[in-house]
Every structure is written in C-alpha cells, then in structure tokens.
Amino acid sequence: MNRGTTVPTVRGRHALVLLRDEPDIAVVRRQLDRLGMGVTVRRPGEAEADGAGIDLVFLDVDAAPEVGGGWSLGECAPIVAVVGTETPSRLKWMLDREPAAVLIKPLRSAGLYTAVVVALHQGQRRRETDARIEKLEGRVRSRRTVSSAIVRVMTRYGLTEPDAFALVRRAAMQRRTTLEHVCAEIAGDGELPLRAGVG
Amino acid sequence: MRISRKPSVSIGLLFSQAGPYQMMGTEMLKSAMLAISEINESDAFDFTLVPHVRDPKGVVENYHAACADLIRDPGVEHIIGCYTSASRKQVLPIIERTDRLLWYPARYEGFECSDNVIYVGAAPNHNVVPLVRYMLEHLADSAFCVGSNYIWTWESNRVIREIVSAAGGQIIAERMLDLGETSVAHIVDEIVARRPPVVFNTLVGQSSYLFMRAFHAAATRAGLAVPVLSCSLCEPELKLIGADASVGCITSSGYFASIDRPENHAFVARWKARYGADSSPSVDGQYSYVAVMLLARAIRRGGAADVASVRSAAGNLRYEAPQGAVWVDPGNNHCVATPRLARSVQGFRFEIFWEAAQPERADPYLSDLDLSALDRVPASSQRTATMRRPSYLRVVK
Image (cartoon, rainbow over all chains, first blue to last red; front, side, top):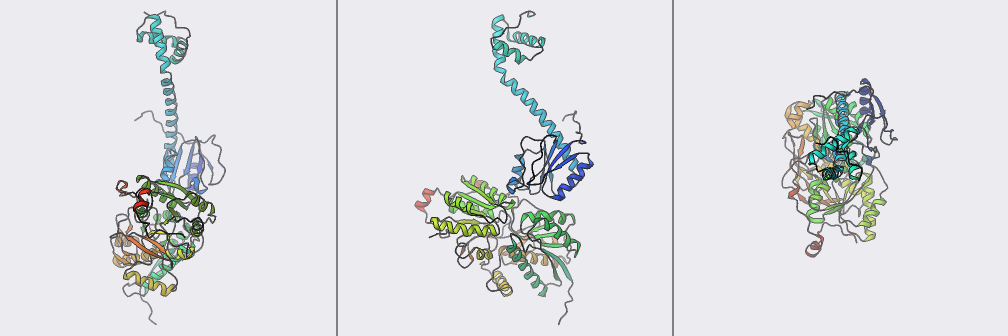
C-alpha cells in the first residue's frame, strides 16, 4: 500500500479511441467529454493518429489487425482494453499489448472513469518503474568498474575496503558527480583522489 | 373449419436469408418453421406459436436493429436465431438489458455463458475437440489450417494448436480469408506445394465451397490425398460444393441426416415432405428445430411463456430430438448433446463412424479439457510400416 497515491487528474488529458462499433464509440465520446478529456477517434482502416499528446488509448480487442481493423501500436500511452469476446485467442492478443485497464462490452458510462483513472495511474507507475529499472541497470553495469576502482584505491593507499569506498564517495560528493563516474575515471587509469582527510 | 381457440405466443426468428451465409440462414429458418407448424398442429400443446421473421441479410450491424424491432413490436420474449458469433454478440446487449431469451442454434467457439441465452448448438468440447483428438489418434500430428477471418476460426485454431502442441505435434500454417472472400487459389497452391498430412477447414459459406472445389481439383492434378477436416460442413453444403469435391471430408457435428434412430427418420421424412425429396435437413437447421421444440416444451411445462418461467422449466427437460436425447443444463444454459464424427460420401451424405456413448455436458470454457491424457498418432515411419491406410481417407486418383 502506498499512502502517497493520488487519483490522477483526468481533465485535459487526451484519449485515442480505437474502437469498431459506433454505440461503443458514442458512449466513450460522451463520457470522456463529461470528464473534460479530449478524444480522437480512429475506426478500423483509418489512418493512425499521431501518438504525440496522447495520454491513453482505448483499444478494441475484437477488431484485430487480421480483420483489416487493427491499429499498429508501438511504444504508446497506457491502454484500456475493450473486450467483447472472452476467448483465450483474443485475450492473448490483448495481453501482448499489456493493457493497463480492461472494460467489457457493451460499454456504458459507469466504469469508464474508473478505467481512465486506473490506466493513467498504471501508466505513471510504469514510467516510474521503467526509470528506476534503467537507473538500477546502470548501477549493475558499472559494478565491475566500481570494484576495480575501489581495489586500486585500497592498494595505492593501503586502506580497508570501507575506507576506500568512503574516500571515493567523498570525492564524488565534492565534485558533485556520481560515484560511478569517479570510479570510471579511476579505473580508466585516471587520477586517484587525494588521500587528504582519510584517517 | 375448426377455429383455433388456443392462445398464441409470439416468437422472433432472426435469420439472414441474404449475404455470405444466406444458405445456412435459410435452412435454419425452414427448420424453425417446420417445428412451429408441428407444434401448432399438435394436440399435445394448448397454445400456438406465431413466428415473426426478421432478415438482417448477413450484415452484422443489422442484427441489433432487427432484434430491437422484435422486442419493441410485436414485443416477443423469445428470439430464435443468429448463425455467427459476431451476430450473437451484436444482439446480446439488448437481449440482456431487456431480459429476453435468445435461443442460439449454431455451434460456437465457447467462452460465453449468458443467463439470457440458451445455447442449443455444440460447444467446443462437442465439436472441435473430438475432431482434433481423432486427427491425433488416427491421421497425423500436424495440420494446415485454413479458415474465415473471424472469431470462430481464431478460437478454433487456438484450440487445435493447444491440443496438437500438447501432443508434440505442430500447426504447419494458418491461412485466413475474409468472410465472403472468393479468391482461394493462393491458399490452394500453398497447400499443394507444402503437402501437409491434413487440412483443417474452418472456412464458412461461399469461401468454403470454392476452396473445397479448387482444392479437390488441384490435389487431383498433383496426385495428393490430403484429408480435409471440418467442424461445420452439412448435407446441403455438400451439394453446393459438388459431387466429387465434397467427398471424403471428415466432419464433426452433433447432427447428420443419416443418424439412425426413429425420431430422425420421422424428422427427415417430414422435412422432405415439406421441402422436397431432393432436399436434406442440416445440422444448424436441426438445432433450430430443436430450439423451437425445447421452447414449446418449456412453455408447456412451466405453464407460461415469460422468460423466468421458461428458463426454469427448460432446465433438465429431456427431449428425444432427431439428434438424440437433448436437454438444457441449468448450470450453464448449454445443451447436453451427443458429439459425432462422420465422413462425407457420394450422394451428398455423411457416414457416421464415431459417436459418444451418451450425451455429454457442454464445457464452454474447456475447463475439463485434459491435455495430458491425449494419445498421439504413431510416428509416420511406424504408421506406414504397420498401419493400413484408414478407409475414411479420401484417395484422389
């Protein structure tokens, strides 16, 4: 549980609506309009909308690319999957697109706000998680550099590992850069940090 | 002239008599009308059924309006109809919202269970599963799939792939044509070039007839004997395909006109008397007939025609149908029925070579499908060495 969770603002957000059936499109348009959201509708076979400025996508799971409907979706905003036929073949197609929320046809106004909120929230979470993973992966990648730099400092100054680490970390703080950056310099045969301040 | 004093019950019939599957829609309507006449002429029923027919002409979007029209005026409680799943999905919202009952006669791919639908036709465990199992045990462990590009094919192919993969086999290719598509040559060429041991055909309507004819001609030229498997082919379609091209297709179905039981002999005789000695009832037609019969019996049992009474009265109400004993399972609103396998022979008929020992419950979500219990066809080397070619295989000379 995360006490810091807030319900995302929906006003001003823009939805790309990739649905096939007119009654469903009408329901989405009306309800999102009430929520103060912008709507772009693309029916099967119509040219793709520019992904820029799109905050979430309503995607018809029944109108697969195979039926000439279909919309190619690359990296995109969070998806609200709209499901009619609950067969595993369609559900697999849906899962491959990693929906953030799901609605069951026939659509009605109730449930749409919840789906929008969940999708925006999940989208935000996914971006945060992706950023965090990227950062952690960077750290993992530089682990070998860090350890070889620490070993070099230990050998050069005859320090214990914690002391060598503290020295490098302090150098990074003084130079307002990252530990990984300093270590890359040391490992790359650069200057060793001054020993000053080490007890 | 005796004037009928019986009260009447209006029912809706929603069948397409135009469009890509007009032949099936017409067959279903004819069967439903036959059943209605029989009910109305019978002393065993103290009411008559008044049919109100709507024709959506095979256009999916028309189904909603036609259904809404039947519900508004004449205001029917019960609608018998729809052939494709796409059309059923169109009417489902309005049927559920207005709490009516749809009697759906066709086979379908499963994964649905509405309180407002009686599923009279076959569920996937009645239909595609026995056929794939048979293929694995007797024919081959790989297949080339060709089908119409909609949910029926997508889901059938998934089930086929799942079962075949579990048995260690493979799907050689999946090729699809849009509903009503008539250009089939490229698929026929590919099949002839790749020489699969089996072709699984889930094409519907015109595409299927054209495919069967073109494939028969090409296979004959190439000296190929590739059995075609189908879950939907029926007697009137064999006629449309033609004498030679329609022979040898291994078909899974709950009904064939050749079923040998008194109820079916009588049904076929009544059918021919009404629609001509040259004509033959079909599986979807028979299901439409059964739908009317089940509805009439449920009205009689419950003493009322409203949805709640009929739904409750229909549960476990056993009817000796042409297809065998059939009844609605109140747990899932699907019919308990007997699956069968047959091969098409000369004379536009099917020879039944397997049927389940007793009627089987529908398993719409395939929850009971045990993939680990599958037998696999012996490796092809062993097969040719030790097994005689089964007689049901079409040999193209």
